Image (cartoon, rainbow, N blue to C red; front, side):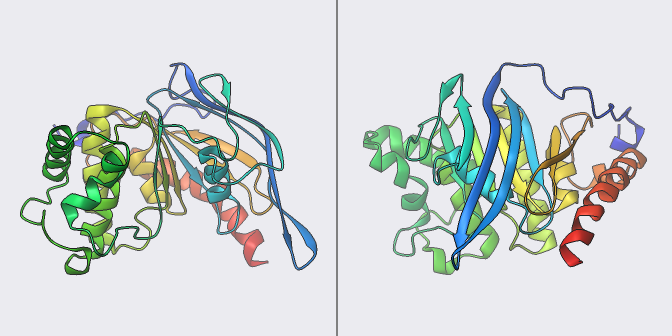
Length: 280
């Protein structure tokens, strides 16, 4: 049965995508920066609830504070005001949790370490014994279809392959929550689709809680259970959309369905309003 033949009815935006317990809760989250002596509000009073096993995309125009929200959740930068909780406990800047994994936008492979040693870097730092480390790294390399490149250095790999290494370096740590900051933004369309397939395959087996930052609406619709749309700067929560397409999903055939086209149009109208403000 193809995706076009399935019932892919889109639920109303008011219906929650997931009814599991809340893993991450933000209330009144704001961030200001000082630039050339002036105060700039990047994020303004954002409230978020991210539930267990949910795949949520933060979408919005360039400069709306998507990555800033993610970095506050990760504890990489402090919030100017507001609170963040992880499993009901306060989470602040500098308080890193082993429950969180982070995949950055830029290629973060270490040039002088092989694929195998890059993937296992976090496990090595965590003091995981050699036998366990090798087993987990070999499994990750198999999952990412990097077989045969275990001893290759990043300079010998394509951009897509390096991003697979970065993804598996985060996943091999077995985080409960995966934070992803436009990880496929620099890839060409074909490679990006391959990465979507890989991520969907892994997520559908492991069901981590994922917060995924993107400016690509097609990417958000392909991957997510829910899309949180931020306004143009200062970033405020403008609207939420449930992405109620059945899983498992195929990254290509899903986009050929009328249900996908309908939801794309709805979200695009709202996103376009914010993008026009940036260009004004």
